[in-house]
Amino acid sequence: MLRDEAATVRPATEADVGFLIDLMAGLAAYEATIEGGYAGEVTVTPEALAELLFEERSIGALVAEDGRGRIVGCATYFQIRSTWTGAPCLYLEDLFVDRRARGAGIGRALMASLASLCETQGLKRIDWICSASNEPSLGFYEGLGAVRMDGCLHHRLSGDALAALAKEAR
Image 1: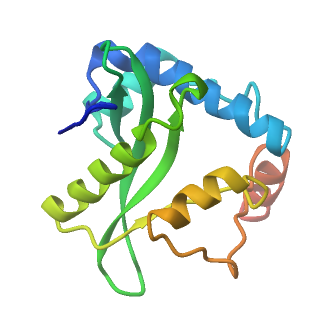
Image 2 (image 1 turned 180 degrees about the vertical axis):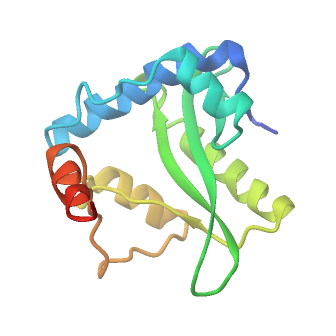
């Protein structure tokens, strides 16, 4: 997909599933240092992730390899459609570059590959969330030209709270 001095970005293959899980766990551990509470939340099995990527094709993934062919970064994403515009969009679920490979342009190469994917597939934008306390990542995204949506707060309903609310519908 994209090759430069820092990285080669390509679609993930079935052989990459273990590396993707390791990188997602690295992202959760990194976010735990900023926010707390995310370490250990990556519980997807290799079989389940492979099914999502290659059988259902409900999500996509790109991997970035360094000059030695080692996978050092990833982006996972899926397509959404805006109800306000009706336009198809890309939702970036995970973007992570191993700390030892940061600063070499790999994150930018992954985002450029996602932007290219949007253009070739007619997707109108990329959406994602980022922790308000993750200043390095916020600066990176703004450096790409991204606009911070400060008026929006990410919410999650899961576990016991999800089950309790579901009982109300029965």
